Image (cartoon, rainbow, N blue to C red; front, side, top):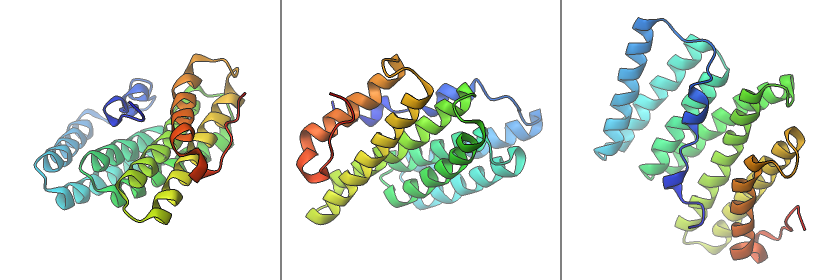
Length: 197
């Protein structure tokens, strides 16, 4: 299946790599806030869930600064919003995460594996949500615009990974496959050529 969200839970990949952990009390509090947000979303109380996710993300930023834990928190909040069909709110969280990883990518280049992964995931998150927005939009020109944005972010994700890895690196398989699928189905509307033969 093309771009199946069920397989797109990448934030957990870098959790285990987080260097700095908050103290135990704060960690327990944060876990409780996150559980509350996830529970609200699962119960269909989506507006309340978004409010709690905002609280969670801002607390992570306060505790850990603008680094990888914050980018992961933004990704988790965005994932939850995507599952709860709150696409505009999810988009905002994903954009916050990307703004954070862009800074890290600019300062470290491809030297930190955690940053390489975090920035790749942030770009992939945006590609996914714009693809989803395209699928759910009724108006044709907005559909085209969303698929174009999705293609742009997949393209950026691939370019970033290619600068940090060999072009044949296995980590490129998924974004290349997703981008190829998008272009195969909507190539005429996104007017893009694949960056590989």
